[in-house]
Image (tube, rainbow, N blue to C red; front, side, top):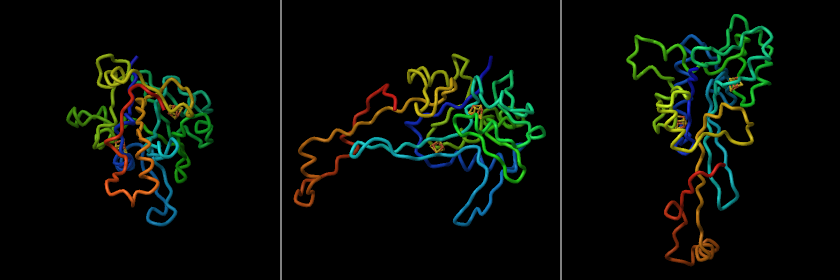
Length: 242
Ligand code: SF4
Ligand code: SF4
């Protein structure tokens, strides 16, 4: 069975949010829209997004890293949001594995958002229906577009190529190759163990600081040759999960 998905390389994402804005632009004017925006230019903006990038720090000083974590529906192979839906509005398509919401059947009860382990569903306060990423189903099959453009808008917008799109069950696809190259995919452990873990592992970056450097950090102004430990001191350790 085909299982379309996004595979996101956390090593490559720079947190620019190009995927967030391109998603909002495409989908607010597409079949899944409109996507509400309240107080967009005020201090307290709110609204519906299918894709958000969460940025946080891990590790303990001085061995810390900033993680940019793009978050959208993973179109789970066995989606917990579907069986809890009392009206059948949430469903998974057999032909391509995409999980969708039928707005005409959704009653906005939010059961699915409680069941989703990834926080991928958002209620549209205006239409009172649940919304989430559709994998741009209204453009990936649009034959009026050149074939290379038939991808989710986030994947097209990403300037670093962090977002790959394709069939994870097709062994020759770009996404399958990426998963094989990285030795498998895994989600942040604290986010649950659902089988749809379409995130490539983030390699551990360990900044090696020597004792000499630490003395300089204590009082750098006294050392003319002081240079802050940085990229030159970093080493990449492959195959280490966060
Ligand atoms: Fe459902 Fe959440 Fe899985 Fe998407 S990520 S299919 S909303 S459980
Ligand atoms: Fe990360 Fe790409 Fe989204 Fe930018 S567009 S935040 S690099 S996934």
